[in-house]
Length: 285
Length: 332
Ligand SMILES: Nc1ncnc2c1ncn2[C@@H]1O[C@H](COP(=O)(O)OP(=O)(O)OP(=O)(O)O)[C@@H](O)[C@H]1O
Ligand SMILES: [Mg+2]
Image (cartoon, rainbow over all chains, first blue to last red; front, side, top):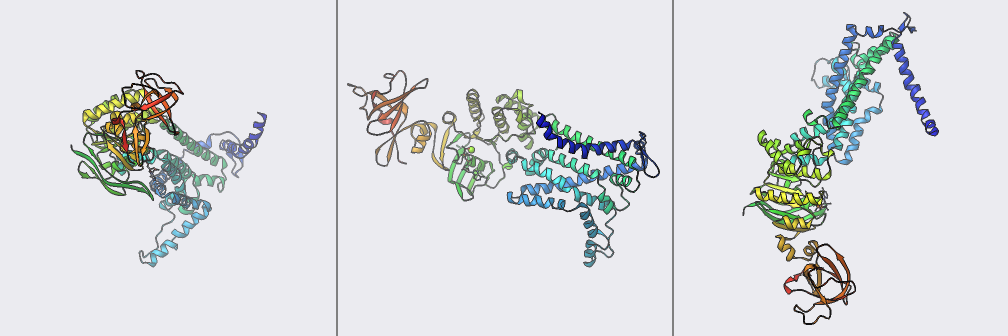
């Protein structure tokens, strides 16, 4: 007993020091206010949360949700076929395929974002090529708009969608598709009635990962979106760095964290309902 | 009789492995045909080729006079009861059974009616709302049968469909399946390891060994007149005697009779062999008497029913005789 407690002690210490304590600090700060010079005063106010309801911030929040939603849908549309393709490859090609998907993770995210800037900017790689071959007369403005942000987000988060979907397709019992075919289902119908519902858990896991990650994203809008497209991640970053309004930044962070938490809880609820046999997965297809 | 399925020079290789060298087989409309053979002899592979789940390396498959060799499974009017059930885990029993009917756009009313009928037949009415993973192996097996049966296909392929059931249920489903098949005039291609099942249910038994048909006959002939040593060995128990070079005499244990070694004035043929009883095992309706033959270390087995001469004891000396017509000569 005593031994066991001793053994988990370092983990508990580590967790409380690096996770619980900072979180509590952010919670505390979110109820504080600040002096004009950025000093934090703990006077337990709800003002920061109230500020959040101002139209400006609500519209940034709404924009963030919309971008996250579109990013998620796009990663599903691109990620599912990619995962399916990799899962269909001969066994020896699957591992390399997955590694190709993951390679970008090995490079710093900021550097990868700037790589996109180099490709897309007006004097960039893509414009130079298009000009050279006479496809266009004038360089195209491809950066610093919503499309560029979307591109960056999808690029950054695609692996989070591909991996869980790949796992669920890989686990699918191939014999079920044979049975469906035997019972008269064309390959497309078999996909819709069997493959898709049975890989739903993979899609759900990928959706949670991508959606939550894109809610907090600030590098992409910053680097590829320019000043025009601030999302809630940028707003938070600003409060902590340039605006030096820690209490408001804290409040925004807590709202974001709570939203993510709610989504995760919903996800587990849906998952256990499906496994418990309550919900009919076929109807979802 | 109308031909339902014709396999013409069908062979199958997996890589360099020849699983089926070449098979020709015709199956007639309304026939109950059983494939019997040891594990790995290619029974499932043959069914899968008929279902379209596997392409034959060579040869042609005709279904109701149509060449279906190149047709995908979903375009063949054939259904399979899979050895491993392959039930859809995200659907209830009912939904599993409905699946094939939906695919064929059967009118809703008729779907309902047919599903009810097979649910009743397979005694699954109470379990209709369950998912496969909430059921026992035997129950799942019944769902697999129901799911295929409900489609009334031209040919039903059944890959050991009763293997996981207990004795009682197996007996009753054997009877149900047989009645159904006969009543509706369905064509069944049935795979089983259970010889008794094969002998009682089939119109015809195809005994396979290493992808080759050893014998293709009605159950009576298969049992009483095996063409090869393999068939005699594989179906029922047999005693083998090498009286001549290159020819083996086969005598079933129930055809072997035992008498006292020094019996006089017997009104039966002279004993062909003599030996000593080594063991007597009680089997309910009969005793199995094991006799070690003189001048060899071969042991033969004879079934003795209790109205026979006497109950034998180990170490007794016996003579062994049989009627000439009960001896079958095989050459392979
Ligand atoms: N996809 C495959 N690839 C390679 N070999 C295979 C494949 N499918 C079957 N085989 C081989 O073909 C042979 C016949 O297999 P099959 O499943 O037809 O046997 P079976 O008669 O049904 O046996 P059982 O009674 O055990 O079910 C076996 O040796 C098996 O290993
Ligand atoms: Mg088999």
